[in-house]
Image 1: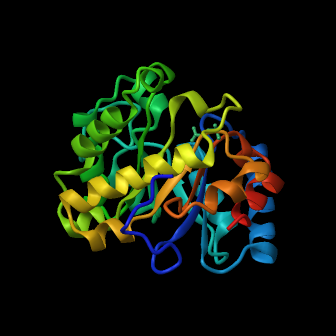
Image 2: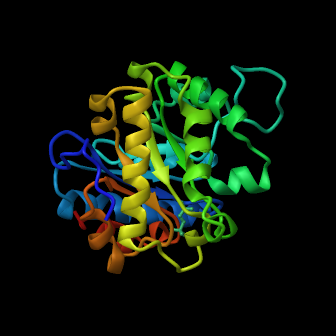
Image 3: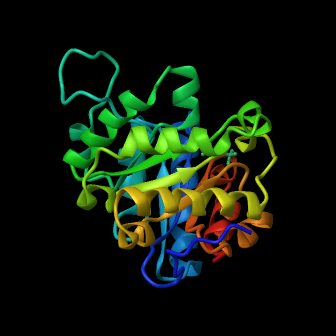
Length: 263
Ligand code: PGA
């Protein structure tokens, strides 16, 4: 297995389980899911594991209301790259920050694929979110074709370097990275814990080269792609995997909380 020399898993890195609700969440479903998650979190989840709910924009305020005082964090699924202005239908990082959000997902593979977002644009979004003190969860991951063509390291290196390597050490330390192989998202196919660990360690080695070993050792790197209660323990036991970005299973409060209890 690919081990990283920069890791000391239980030392300093935050454990994070973030639920990306994607385009799901009527008012009623939002209220039900958020209140169940908050109740279960309070009763069951260990201190030291950060749980984040990431609903569609319009659900954010209601989720925050329900999560208030619980310690459960709230994030957004995207932000625009400009500060403000005539961009009908868009939401800026500044607007999100004014609602006191904690996180924003940047560069999810669905944004890359369906909305044509490339690394250069994503670098701007990362800048905007950091400017407003929102922690970006920057996503990277290869397609099935790229993996089968043995291009996964190259693809990840390009996504991570072009999206994040212009940052300074202070900024990168506020950033969370999510490795989400596209072939594992919503497909029921998870990367094996070893495959995920290999890429996480690789990302950490890139961070060590570009920044410092301390920076590399401190950044939380999440795995995403068909994480379920049944596979979370094995994935989270890997030395460079610090949690998960959860799609489908985040829509079931029981599953989501069970995943958050898998460290
Ligand atoms: P999934 O989605 O858990 O449904 O595979 C993960 C994601 O897209 O973040």
